[in-house]
Amino acid sequence: MREKPVAADISDASSDLGPRLRAIRLGQGVGLRELARRLDLSPSSISQIETGKMRPSVRTLYALASEFGVTVDEVLFTESPPSQDGTSPTAAGPSAASAEPGLAVQRAVERPAIVLNSGVKWERLMLWADEDVEFIEATYAPGGASSPDDSFVRHSGHEFGYVLHGTLRVVVGFDEFVLEPGDSITFPSSTPHRLSNDGTEAVRAIWVVRGRRGTETGREPTDATSTAPAARRVKVARPVHKRPTPLAAKRKR
Image: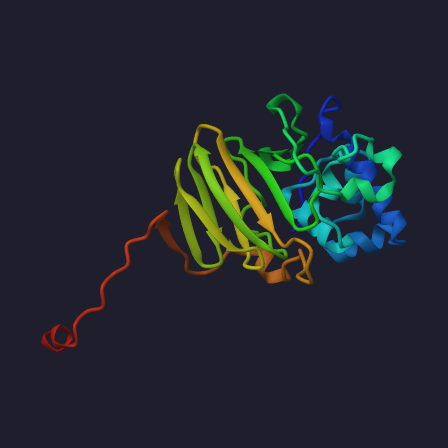
């Protein structure tokens, strides 16, 4: 499903995203048209993302990360933690960029943040790019969603979400949930899913993705990206399970 171009704000911190994506693509020797073919996007869309004229959606971002074999953290953010001996990552060498600090505090005003397509903002809640865990605060503006209507995201890992504010609609496979403040959810990331804000106020949620490095692809089959599942069950955060009808009662009907 083709994405609609959305102009990027020049002052936005995500202006470095395009050049990073282009550097990764060239480093792996993948042509622009070949990448567009693999992701079912137009070459023009890839070019606009790489030049900063267009922001990718959450779905496209995960597809790019999966195609390149990197984590979303590696694509989005360049900040690295100081090493335990106090030296900077550059001075300590390349391997220090992925090293975990023994103790780290990140102030709210220092969070790396990026605004994606479709009204979604991600703020990283950890100082370093972990190879196995992504820890973010996600904000969905009214009408914001992780992917276009009737299309889904799928990738490696397992997701854990906790809603802080607003009402978040989460579709996982054939199930649909409405999460309110204090509600949480967990599901395999390999199951096609979509997160959206259908309300009138912004949604804020804490999101953790574990095990992003894997063999699952970030791309959906063509039929799954164009249409939603035919029958979907709408549930609240804690669905009430119906008791089975006794056999005797069935016979009386």
